[in-house]
Length: 94
Image (cartoon, rainbow, N blue to C red; front, side):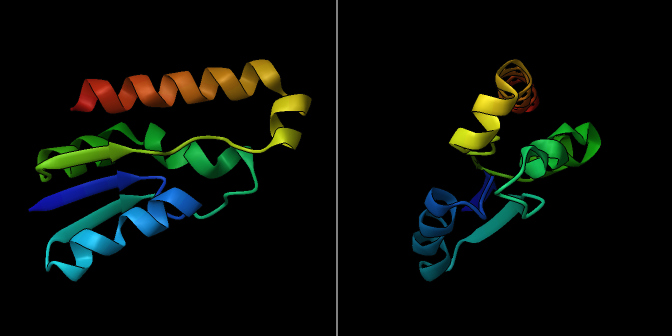
C-alpha cells in the first residue's frame, strides 16, 4: 500500500508513519519541517507536487497545519485561513 502523509514531521505524523513502514508499505510525505512556524504548511500549497503525490497514493492522511498557541494568538485569522485552505487543497487533490 502507498500512503501520503501531509505534516508527517509533527508528533502524530511521525508516529503514524511507523506502522506502515514496519509493514513494508511505501510512505510519501509533504512537510517543510518547520513545525514551530506558520510555514509548516507552505509545501501543501505546491499544487503540482500535492497532486502528483496524491495520484501516486492509495491512502492520504492529511495532518499538515500551522499549530501552536503562540501562532494562533499572534495571527489567528491567518493561521485558520491557511489551515482551512491547506485542507481544501488536500481534499481537492484527493
